[in-house]
Amino acid sequence: MSLSTRAIAALGAVVVIGAGTVGFSVWHAADAGKPDENVATLTVGRSSITSAPFCENGGKALGQDALAKCQADAKTARDKGVLPTSDVRASDRIGVGVPTGVADRGWFAFTDGGSQGQAPLAQDSRGTTWSGSVPASTVLNSTGKTLVTVVEADQKTQEILGIWYFDLNTKDS
Image (cartoon, rainbow, N blue to C red; front, side):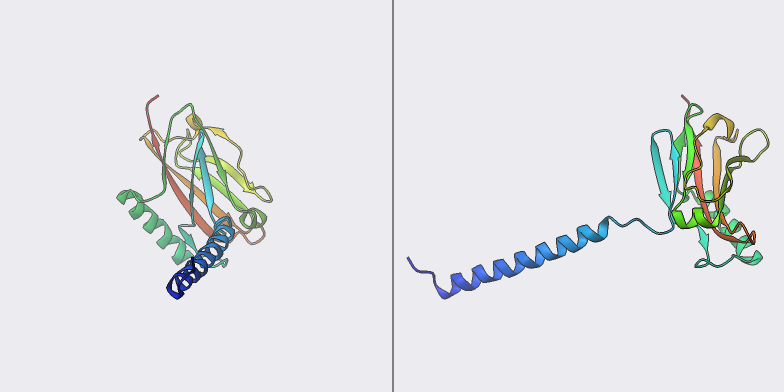
């Protein structure tokens, strides 16, 4: 039994396509495991969500006009329901994580809830990538919707470099 020229050509094509597929798969697998550079994580109970900064300027300080626009845009996004959102129960614990670069420059996080109308999740953090975990009951807003704000701020100059927003929807137990 001999192989025809067509069979040999078809077998060669399968080998070339297979090698190309394996090569792409290896490249894709190697590339897929890299974390996003500037993603903040909000952990609620046993679940978490991530988000890129809502406002940033490529590592440079945000000016007053940019900060005002950022807040206005965030309010609009929140009204439209497009901010990253997680359900929360009063019995949950809440924490925030930031990338190493943000932790090195400095950051803080807070909610628009709590007994004072603004509850800290992390204050003047530098060098740490995790806020710790606080009881949700102490940081939630009584309206049922709580805004979480994460701010990257240079500890030396007090300039704001990036802002992340998350929404928490309070659910009954």
